[in-house]
Image (cartoon, rainbow, N blue to C red):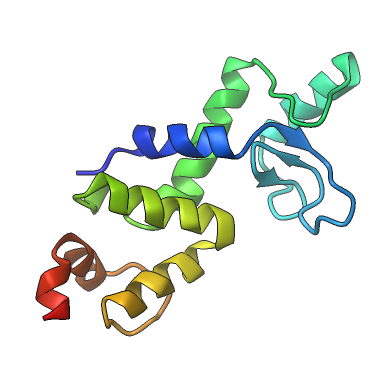
Length: 141
Protein backbone atom coordinates (compact mmCIF):
# COMPACT_ATOMS: atom_id res chain seq x y z
CA UNK A 1 0.00 0.00 0.00
CA UNK A 2 1.04 3.57 -0.61
CA UNK A 3 2.66 5.52 2.20
CA UNK A 4 1.65 9.08 3.10
CA UNK A 5 5.13 9.92 4.42
CA UNK A 6 6.69 9.29 1.00
CA UNK A 7 4.12 11.44 -0.80
CA UNK A 8 4.35 14.16 1.84
CA UNK A 9 8.12 14.47 1.53
CA UNK A 10 7.75 15.33 -2.16
CA UNK A 11 4.98 17.83 -1.51
CA UNK A 12 6.91 19.40 1.33
CA UNK A 13 9.79 20.15 -1.04
CA UNK A 14 7.56 21.47 -3.81
CA UNK A 15 5.36 23.71 -1.69
CA UNK A 16 8.21 25.89 -0.43
CA UNK A 17 7.94 28.18 2.58
CA UNK A 18 6.15 31.44 3.39
CA UNK A 19 4.87 33.71 0.62
CA UNK A 20 2.43 36.52 0.07
CA UNK A 21 2.27 37.23 -3.64
CA UNK A 22 0.24 40.25 -4.68
CA UNK A 23 -2.76 39.17 -6.75
CA UNK A 24 -2.74 35.55 -5.52
CA UNK A 25 -6.33 34.74 -4.58
CA UNK A 26 -5.09 32.44 -1.82
CA UNK A 27 -3.42 35.40 -0.14
CA UNK A 28 -0.66 34.60 2.29
CA UNK A 29 0.59 31.03 2.07
CA UNK A 30 2.78 28.85 4.21
CA UNK A 31 4.15 25.72 2.54
CA UNK A 32 1.27 25.77 0.09
CA UNK A 33 -1.46 26.33 2.68
CA UNK A 34 -3.40 29.41 1.59
CA UNK A 35 -4.72 31.58 4.38
CA UNK A 36 -7.74 32.79 2.39
CA UNK A 37 -8.85 29.20 1.77
CA UNK A 38 -7.85 27.77 5.14
CA UNK A 39 -8.12 30.66 7.63
CA UNK A 40 -8.78 28.41 10.64
CA UNK A 41 -5.66 26.25 10.19
CA UNK A 42 -3.98 26.23 13.61
CA UNK A 43 -0.54 26.71 12.08
CA UNK A 44 -1.33 30.37 11.36
CA UNK A 45 -0.94 31.15 15.06
CA UNK A 46 2.66 29.92 14.96
CA UNK A 47 3.39 31.63 11.63
CA UNK A 48 1.96 34.94 12.90
CA UNK A 49 3.92 34.76 16.16
CA UNK A 50 7.12 34.03 14.24
CA UNK A 51 6.51 36.93 11.84
CA UNK A 52 5.88 39.32 14.73
CA UNK A 53 8.98 38.26 16.62
CA UNK A 54 11.46 37.66 13.79
CA UNK A 55 10.03 38.93 10.53
CA UNK A 56 9.89 36.59 7.56
CA UNK A 57 11.24 36.48 4.01
CA UNK A 58 9.60 35.00 0.91
CA UNK A 59 10.35 31.29 0.69
CA UNK A 60 11.43 31.05 4.32
CA UNK A 61 10.46 27.99 6.34
CA UNK A 62 9.98 28.14 10.08
CA UNK A 63 11.80 25.54 12.15
CA UNK A 64 9.11 24.60 14.65
CA UNK A 65 8.14 20.99 15.47
CA UNK A 66 4.52 21.87 16.29
CA UNK A 67 4.14 23.77 13.01
CA UNK A 68 5.55 20.79 11.10
CA UNK A 69 3.09 18.49 12.88
CA UNK A 70 0.14 20.77 12.02
CA UNK A 71 1.28 21.06 8.40
CA UNK A 72 1.58 17.30 8.03
CA UNK A 73 -1.84 16.74 9.63
CA UNK A 74 -3.33 19.31 7.26
CA UNK A 75 -1.99 17.62 4.14
CA UNK A 76 -2.98 14.17 5.34
CA UNK A 77 -6.55 15.06 6.28
CA UNK A 78 -7.29 17.52 3.45
CA UNK A 79 -5.67 15.63 0.59
CA UNK A 80 -4.26 12.14 1.29
CA UNK A 81 -7.25 10.82 3.21
CA UNK A 82 -9.68 12.36 0.69
CA UNK A 83 -8.11 10.42 -2.21
CA UNK A 84 -8.01 7.18 -0.19
CA UNK A 85 -4.23 7.15 -0.33
CA UNK A 86 -3.82 4.34 2.20
CA UNK A 87 -5.90 2.02 -0.01
CA UNK A 88 -3.92 2.68 -3.19
CA UNK A 89 -1.43 -0.10 -3.88
CA UNK A 90 1.08 1.72 -6.07
CA UNK A 91 3.06 4.55 -4.50
CA UNK A 92 3.61 6.48 -7.74
CA UNK A 93 -0.10 6.44 -8.52
CA UNK A 94 -0.97 7.65 -5.03
CA UNK A 95 1.75 10.32 -5.18
CA UNK A 96 0.43 11.63 -8.49
CA UNK A 97 -3.21 11.68 -7.44
CA UNK A 98 -2.32 13.32 -4.11
CA UNK A 99 0.00 15.96 -5.58
CA UNK A 100 -2.46 16.83 -8.34
CA UNK A 101 -5.13 17.27 -5.65
CA UNK A 102 -2.85 19.57 -3.66
CA UNK A 103 -2.24 21.75 -6.70
CA UNK A 104 -5.63 21.78 -8.42
CA UNK A 105 -8.12 20.43 -5.89
CA UNK A 106 -9.18 16.93 -4.95
CA UNK A 107 -12.32 16.86 -7.12
CA UNK A 108 -10.36 17.72 -10.27
CA UNK A 109 -7.67 15.17 -9.47
CA UNK A 110 -10.23 12.47 -8.81
CA UNK A 111 -12.32 13.34 -11.88
CA UNK A 112 -9.24 13.05 -14.09
CA UNK A 113 -8.43 9.55 -12.89
CA UNK A 114 -12.10 8.59 -13.18
CA UNK A 115 -12.12 9.75 -16.80
CA UNK A 116 -8.88 7.91 -17.52
CA UNK A 117 -10.39 4.71 -16.10
CA UNK A 118 -13.74 5.24 -17.86
CA UNK A 119 -15.67 5.58 -14.59
CA UNK A 120 -18.38 8.20 -14.01
CA UNK A 121 -16.57 11.38 -13.02
CA UNK A 122 -18.14 12.28 -9.68
CA UNK A 123 -15.01 13.81 -8.20
CA UNK A 124 -15.33 11.52 -5.20
CA UNK A 125 -13.41 8.43 -4.20
CA UNK A 126 -15.44 5.23 -4.05
CA UNK A 127 -14.66 1.57 -3.48
CA UNK A 128 -15.12 1.00 -7.22
CA UNK A 129 -12.61 3.72 -8.03
CA UNK A 130 -10.03 2.34 -5.59
CA UNK A 131 -10.45 -1.10 -7.21
CA UNK A 132 -9.97 0.47 -10.65
CA UNK A 133 -6.91 2.43 -9.53
CA UNK A 134 -5.36 -0.75 -8.10
CA UNK A 135 -6.21 -2.86 -11.13
CA UNK A 136 -6.60 -0.49 -14.09
CA UNK A 137 -6.33 -3.15 -16.78
CA UNK A 138 -9.53 -4.80 -15.62
CA UNK A 139 -11.35 -1.49 -16.23
CA UNK A 140 -9.66 -0.58 -19.48
CA UNK A 141 -9.87 -3.88 -21.34
